[in-house]
Structure formats: structure tokens, C-alpha cells
Length: 279
Ligand SMILES: NC(=O)c1ccc[n+]([C@@H]2O[C@H](COP(=O)([O-])OP(=O)(O)OC[C@H]3O[C@@H](n4cnc5c(N)ncnc54)[C@H](OP(=O)(O)O)[C@@H]3O)[C@@H](O)[C@H]2O)c1
Image (cartoon, rainbow, N blue to C red; front, side, top):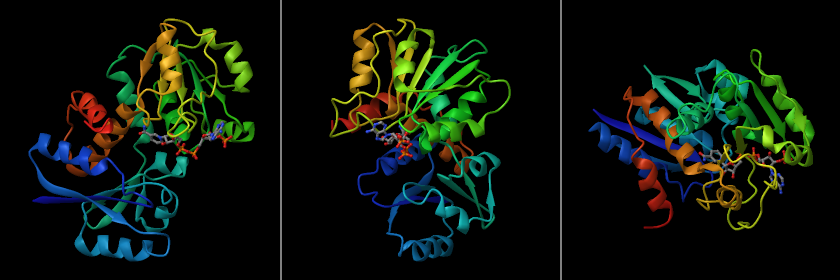
């Protein structure tokens, strides 16, 4: 069979997903194509009707449709329902089921270079409380870490994120200044705000003066590949983790749901970096 896969969102013209999923199809030796299905809000019902008609096997959903897609689904995964966001839809015998792969994709991307980082003694600082932070917060909790403190510009949003708390994890809402002051206590710092993204590449959400050299600093922004925050962390001797790795692994998980192929994609992280650099 030839898989029919794709992406809906607006705008999506520069998406790397077709390239990523073509790599996966080639690796799995499967026939298929991953197409961009563009459309603004008005066009969305027509686009989705078309996808039903062609019997699409699965598709990704990006901004601004991660919430509205729920109205078009037959079923929704429990985690995606709790997160109030769907980024992957799977066609199961004609019925559409929605999932969120961002959080678990993030954790997979982190465990590849740092397999022992997440354990019952790990202290995490999560910067940001937007859509991406929600999935990452939940997925990190699922790893049984000790602490996930939250810092965000609007603290109300960070408090709202606390409602997703699972199990025994300790969690406090901090200002950015408080986070900077107690930075030395964290093993992992995850930057999920849009600060530092192109074209504002000199911006950095917190200062790293008090960072531990053993810490890992992870930035999910991938344009530029090495953000100012990651550059600063490197200069201070800390370890770093890039956002494009998450992009690859959330795709890997979606591909797994569509095709039941669990691919080893570690070697594609550098290839994706070259692609992003336009090489
Ligand atoms: N690598 C990947 O696979 C991947 C996946 C998803 C997203 N991302 C990237 O992650 C970033 C966030 O995406 P999202 O979907 O979570 O966005 P979102 O829901 O709009 O959340 C944006 C976050 O950034 C904060 N923020 C925005 N401007 C700020 C500023 N000037 N100062 C301080 N904080 C600021 C917001 O704080 P407030 O709440 O205070 O407004 C909020 O925490 C984007 O750059 C996106 O490209 C990467």
C-alpha cells in the first residue's frame, strides 16, 4: 500500500515535516507521500472533507488548528484530551483518533543523548507555559522526576499548568528572577518560550550565571539551531540539547502511530540540522 500522510495548519509553506516523513518512509522502505494541506479557517472544513474522501491514513495538525480539530475527531487519546491539543490524527478503520506527540517526542529526543538524566532525583526547571510546555510538563512527570518548577512571564498561565500535575512530583511557580537565583539546583532546564527565535536571536529568557556545569540546558526553539541560551550554556561548560531533535522525534512517534514502524532515527538529527542550515 502507499501511505497517504500530510499536515494541516496555516501557514505551513516552510514546514520541514514533508522532508522528515520522507526520510522515515525511505528508512522503513514504505511507499507513500506526505503532503501539505493548506487552508485558512474558512477553508478548513473543506480540507478535512477532502482528507476523509481520499481516506488519508494519518496527518499532523499544527497552529492554529490543534484545538479546533477536536470537533472533527471520532476519538481522542486521554493525554491529548487533558492537554486540550491534538497534533497527530490516525485513521483507524475510517475513524479519526487524535493524539499529542510533542511531550513524548521531546522526552525521546532527550533520552537519546542523555539516557540517565531523568530519574527520581532529577530537578527540572521548565521555562514557559504555552502549548508546547503543557505536553512537555506532562511527559516529564511521566518519567517520575522529583521536581518540575515552572517559570513563565505570566504566572497565571504557569499556575494553570500545575493543574496537569501527576503523582508525587514537586512543582512550584517561580518568577524568572527567582529561577535565575536558584538555577544551581536544577539538573535540566527546558526552554519552551518563543524567546530567542529568529529574527530575535539575541534574546535570552533568563541569565545563566548560577548554572551547574553538570546541568543540561534544552531549548525547543530550533530556528536558529543554537539559540543564544544554548550558546551561553555551552560557554559556561554546561551540556546542551537542541530543539530540532524534538521536532524529529515528535514526528517519529506520529509515524509510529500511522505505520506501526518503530524506527531508529538518531542518525537523522544531524541530517535535519544540515537541512535547517540549508546545506
Ligand atoms: N522543537 C519542536 O518540535 C517544537 C514544538 C513545538 C513548539 N516549538 C517552539 O516552541 C516555542 C513555543 O511554542 P508554543 O506552541 O508553546 O507557543 P505558545 O503556546 O504561543 O506559548 C508561547 C510561550 O512563550 C512565552 N513568550 C512569548 N513571548 C515572550 C516574551 N517576549 N517574553 C517572555 N515570554 C514570552 C509565552 O509567555 P506568556 O504565557 O507570558 O505569554 C508562553 O510561555 C515556539 O518557538 C515554537 O516554534 C518547537
